[in-house]
Amino acid sequence: MMPDRSQPLTSLTLGAAATVTHINVPPENRARLLEMGLLVGTLVQLVRFAPLGDPVEIKVRGYHLTLRRHEAEQILVASPPGS
Figure 1: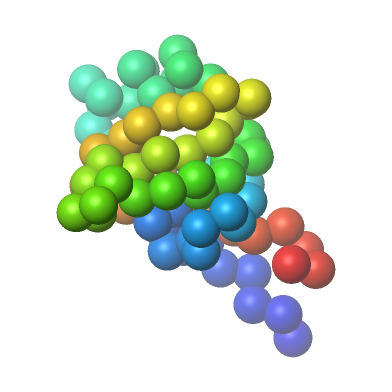
Figure 2: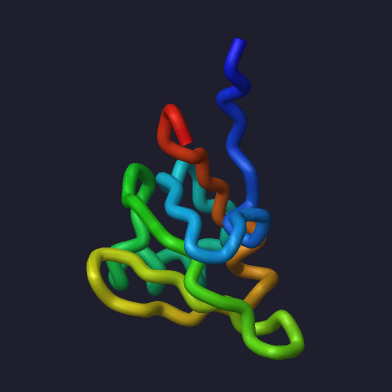
């Protein structure tokens, strides 16, 4: 049986892509993420971590977005089947 578990965005390996399954950030920050196109069902790719691990850069909808690490840890993703 293949595990189909969501994991924090920050647990992806560099360059890996996954689909957003849940966004657990507080409402005051959630609206900002939604406006930038980070929605449940969106494919995202982990691009890089800054030298000290914060912030985190992801690619979403064709552009690069930088998130605070604690925000990225609240965004859950699932890898596409077969990856």
